[in-house]
Image 1 (cartoon, helix red, strand yellow):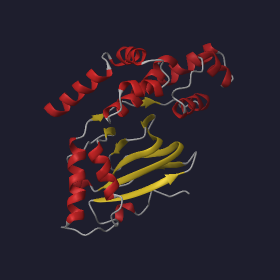
Image 2: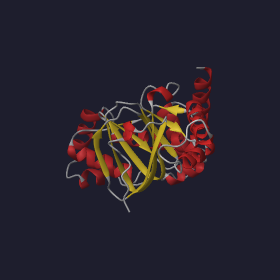
Image 3: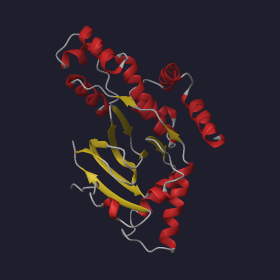
Image 4: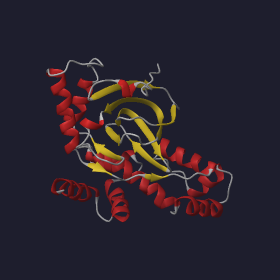
Length: 264
């Protein structure tokens, strides 16, 4: 069953938070659009891909993306996706980020989202429902954020490659086989990647893995679990890749990142 969660009338809902939930079938997409309200896009199942300009933000299960109001974006899913979208009035989002970013979803925030999802669209003001919404906004304002994103190429074959990698980040396909699948030589693929996104295939793929890992570890998953699900033989090989990409291991990176947020 397919539910539409992008609503052209969402800006007319007269509450601090309006919510749309849906289970979306394979290969769904919503074209570029924007709305006055800010949006929290939370994935309960499946990977969401949201594109702004030439940048892709990936939202794995249990994670969320913050999209400020008036920011044009498109969205699509990899596989079956179950998601919740919170649309927040600018006046209620003053303590939330001013730019697009991912937000770590704690167990408390997750439960608050699921509870708010059951409220009527025009929930009563000044009562229990209103306090529940305000608690959710307070918790979101204190949640760790990350600005890691994936540069996206414009060239059609490279976009196909990006979509295949996002759909199956643990794939062990060799660079030569990727090039062959796209109908080009390894040299041509390397040259196009450098022209389009300014990085090698290996670095690009590591960036993808780091983005997915940071969000999932910040949301409570273990380094070992994330490493194995991304296709690494063990946690140490994944930690080495992470350190080479961001300059420090994942636990230290997240600890320091949270410390910066608290001190700021």
